Image (cartoon, rainbow, N blue to C red; front, top):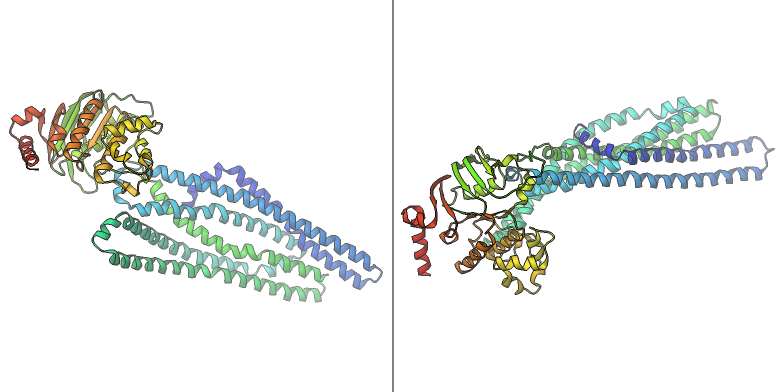
Length: 586
């Protein structure tokens, strides 16, 4: 139960619903216990009639009818109170499920890029769905039935003890065996449940990757191979599930058998006690049998409850593993920060934790507010790393980055990112309308602003050519659009935000040179009062920038304006000559 202690804060949050549910449960159990008493009373009335002929039949009938009406009334009241108990405790569990899912989701949002490199999407999805659902069964039905069982046991045993302490002792003899069986089987359920949840995550991760990469699988005609892989993984998962089901299946028969033994004990010892006069009425035996049967479902539910608790323990452990991770990128300044856009890299180095590759090595440059900087270099030279460090997706390994003279880690993280419009190298679009994808950068944008941003990104003409135009729903990750169209929609999404800093990470790679030229001309107008950094492998994207730096193996090997670099006869000049000749050949 150690892992489930994490949920105590939610029980404290909903303590009034929790306490109200307990009070209703106590009252419901008291009303449910009227039935055995009234039946015992009815037996005694019948016995008194057989022993004493002076009592008229009509009086007996009236007494019995009165008892029957009381039984019906108390049963209805107990049933209604049980309904209220469910409404109180089960609804509370749904609120806790809602809060826990939101907490997990917020944690997912706060965790760093390194976390997502190490963990698979399917596993993350399984923890926020399947694992949270298992936990919900603990805070809802498991807690409710536990409270119900405890209260019923306490009240019923008190009633039984008042009627006959000796017969109560005989009736409860099987309970130690029951307790031991629950302990042993629960331990095994916990172990098997943890293994099953792990395999369930593997299946979720595998299928999620298959669906995301279905085009590649079809292109290579690997459907059958992946189908076989899934069958193999699903069979392993099924095997673990069956192992869990087998041990869970022991509970029901075991509980019912023990209850049956208790009934036999009541009949046997109760009969002997009636014969020797210790018990004065057959009604007492009938009352005890009803008490034992009232305990049948609570005792039988102990197995189900124990199973739910063990599964919840395993699931909460998996959830806690992520909830206890401290995000690497922390917002160290809760106060509002004003961003103007001046950026400075001072002896910045960065090494990726997962690969131990040094992407940047002692990099120094400055970009003044309103200037445009272009970054060129070979693949793997560290261009995208600079973009990630400015938006603080990572923190530097050495050196420091300042924005407007303030070290980046001291700036309010949310204000920093709100002041940045970023177009990533891999244009990611959501499965939503084109309009909403563009408005993602600005929720309250008008249709006119959406069209204006699209025109600046040179994608408006493409969009109005679709049947539903801006209301066209995109497939997963924007699969409906071509690579160039996705990049241009991403550019429009960044532009509409009207940020102080614009970061373009090789976002024109899938666009033809003519459209690229038009977009760059539009960006010159848009970026007049903004700081812009353009990462590219094309000189055409960089030539109009105020300053250009060239990276190689994480170091700056050249920097200056387009004309200065052309005249130096270095890497930039050679790249310019090569790309110019390629353009002439086209």
